[in-house]
Image (cartoon, rainbow, N blue to C red; front, side):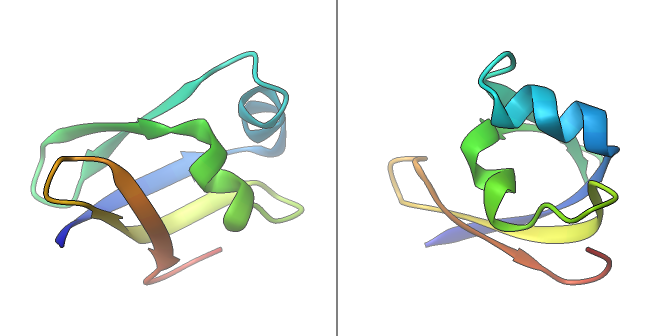
Length: 75
């Protein structure tokens, strides 16, 4: 399994757009400077009242398919 740590900073309204399906993917910067695009449905697991803020670890299959998201900081 492959992982990458990303910095996510989305306010509540931005999360709502992703949650409602108006935006299908999240684009975030990794801690090492790469841009990462992953399914918006992933943030449903970590969204709070104020949105999603912090560093999260994304896990992908060997084929590059999203598996999970886990908070490292924030929430």
